[in-house]
Image (tube, rainbow, N blue to C red; front, side, top):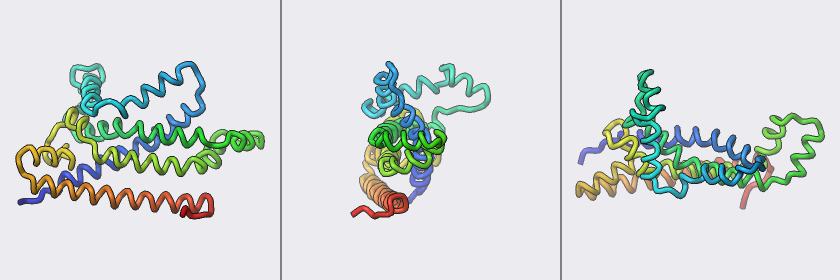
Length: 228
């Protein structure tokens, strides 16, 4: 059995890129929503959370409608020589979309649990909003943000349905480990499928364990104590 490592590198590249994107966008959106009390709060929160409960194939179908060559966005991108469908960026978009709700909801909950009196006290001392966020809010919410990042990474690494819909299965280009597992099993190559299963379990365990240790280290620096 010849071993083709390309699904590993594609999966890791896709997952880290998608996690990077959802990390910053998720924190920004979560902070805005945690401080938004308008009439559309519940509606916006539902829309932002929707990819979490939709089947991945449905999310992939919507992405096809958005980025397909016949859509306004697809036509605009094609005019400048960019084609999202069945490309590596499509794997990133799919992974980011399905991972975003986990980053958003967990981070939003972390922001909402912060004692507002602490934030108000910082503002009364004349601290700018940016410094309040950077020096007060972010450190207090960091345990939740760290957990959200781990969950988002795990979801992005395991993404299959939306990726297959919008990126397809193109060897050395869009074939991630979950897709490789599916097609190996479908072709009756159970040994190959098992190899990929064990590999993705090992990668997930190692990366998430490292992220948890890093999160503990950050909490130790922030609070001066280590979790038991």
